[in-house]
Image 1 (cartoon, protein in one colour):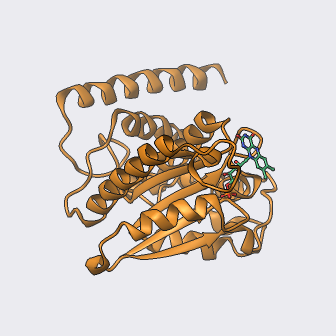
Image 2 (image 1 turned 135 degrees about the vertical axis):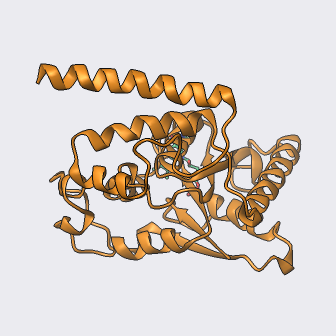
Length: 263
Ligand SMILES: Cc1cc2nc3c(=O)[nH]c(=O)nc-3n(C[C@H](O)[C@H](O)[C@H](O)COP(=O)(O)O)c2cc1C
């Protein structure tokens, strides 16, 4: 089994150390291989805003670079960790550039059901928007979010900035990391499809609206039988989740209908 770690940091330090802790918490007989994808080591051009990937296909993208290498690693992985430090209150520019280029995955999900974790490291600020952005990306790409880790490095690592180190904070966060890593392990080994959360269903219904004005998206969703389904895959949903999905569908459909009529 393979876990792809999508690494937004340019350096092997705080986020890398936490990912290593997750990796080391796996039992040695578990046979899970971690692959660290340091995005900064790949030649990734900036999106040119041409819309070709949305309207036609990602193969129509004018950028010819190493993006397919990273995309293939994500597709082949059994689980994904989205890891980024906070830079200026958000994910790093390196990570954002990659997510921009893979924006078509919000339209045509190729990572459906893959267990995912998000990891944010910070000196104290920006954890919330950064974590929320990574969560939205993982769920928008169809992954199954198993856990979210957020670490204040100055309080967690001794020596980084020892002014903030707290043994109490370290012990609490370490236990959280281990608990989340265990949930991730269980999700990787599970052979039944994961049950989507309310947020997953909200993303599914919201992203279905992309099929209304892109034939590429419509064909992709139609081929997979998603256009009229409750989620990306067949999974029993509780009555409350079913109703939640149907209400969202009805609201989105009526909004789009009204918008189309006004055009
Ligand atoms: C350019 C830059 C911008 C940063 N911006 C923030 C910030 O807005 N808020 C914050 O709390 N920490 C900020 N930090 C600190 C990092 O988030 C923190 O050191 C993190 O642990 C680094 O993780 P890494 O070692 O995996 O790169 C910034 C660091 C850099 C280099």
